[in-house]
Image (cartoon, rainbow, N blue to C red):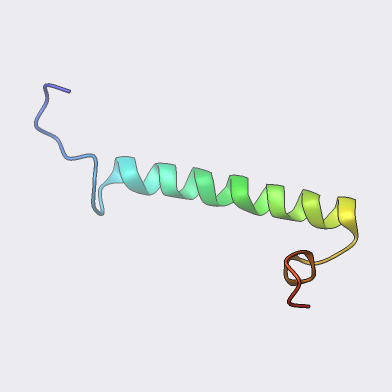
Length: 47
């Protein structure tokens, strides 16, 4: 990476990827909950 722009911290690039990964995690968690019939806490033994 030869440019001088930052890829870390509160910059648009990092926030865009943070949002994408959060949406992906939410969808995976919802799909897992629908497939197993248990909530997230129940899956890890806390519920």
